[in-house]
Image (tube, rainbow, N blue to C red; front, side, top):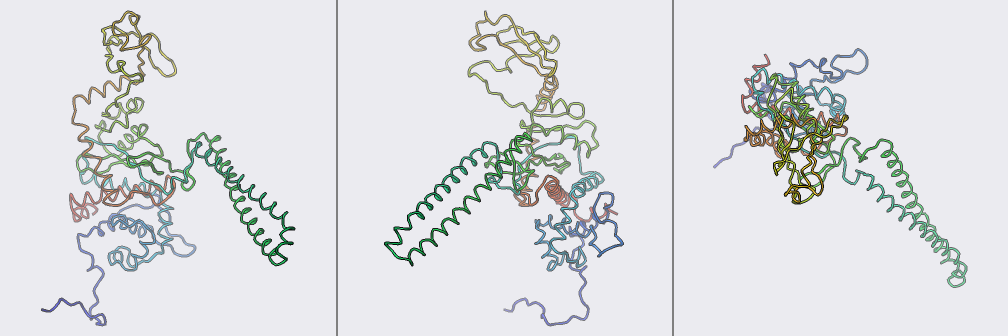
Length: 487
């Protein structure tokens, strides 16, 4: 039985094949080319979008943008790897017309156009609107932690700085003691000369000199570290910050289910219809409590629904954030269960609020009325005079029970009531918003950032979210309808 054989490498073809023949008509690379060509790069703010009359000609930003979109589409985020691919990848031969920029040019393009790349995500969302791929009725918001270019050892807190300073002080004292011991040994060289002779004395002096130089180097390094840590400690006091990252100053140490990492908190808003990401952002906050209103406003900039339904998990629960979103969206955020400060006492949830009468009813049936109100915070205090005679006092309070009600409590009550009528809302949230992060991290392999600084990682995440949406849309429609939508 014979085998299928390839063509002879030395054979010259009479009619050379065109690069166009190597790229299928419905290949995703054709959409990447058409999509970038449809953009107004000047309006988006890409540098060198207009040619200059002086100096060496530059690469057109559209070619470098195509290169980065192709790279993220095929899980290539390294500028060096992309540069190698331009020498051997036939699809890139077609996409960038055999251009072969070096890796520094590719990397500098992403660094110099961070804000413009972030805007690029919005341009693709406009196309999704045109294709009616966004339902806009229900949006789910979630956050996930991504590792930055900063190790945990290079992340400092005030307590860690104090511990390191104590350790360095011990090292400095140890090196000083070693120098003293060396001095004592040098003083005793006279008796050594009598016992061992001139040659061995010379050898011993050389050894002591090397030891002294080595100890002095270690002492100098420790003193430099101490000075640096003391400067960092002064920055803590001046800026009133809780932590400082030395490699990537914008990254923060955050807790995750797998442990702690130093990185960023990535926020996404996902539409229910096709699970497309409609908004993406990056935050330094170690939790999600202050992210709800910001993500709702970013979502409102993309969708056309004037009052959408937006759901998030209990990690986003914060009364002020919920109240800030009430006028622009119907938010659904479950209230986390609050543990009692004293075991066995009635929790606040057992005190029923009457909005019409502005009173609370306790488990014993007594009425708590408003007794005070703080002008700065708007918080109200409710009490009753019946606590001393109440048979349930031991289960409620040691003295007199007070209930605090914030100025945002009415908005939270309205949200809680809405959530009661839609008990399946949280199941929908999980089905919608967990998939994008799972795909980006597990399938794409984008678990960490390769660049440093807030603007750079925001551009990275925008590219990842854009490519996630592009692959979703290709699965829903195919490449040919997408190409037709650009004409």
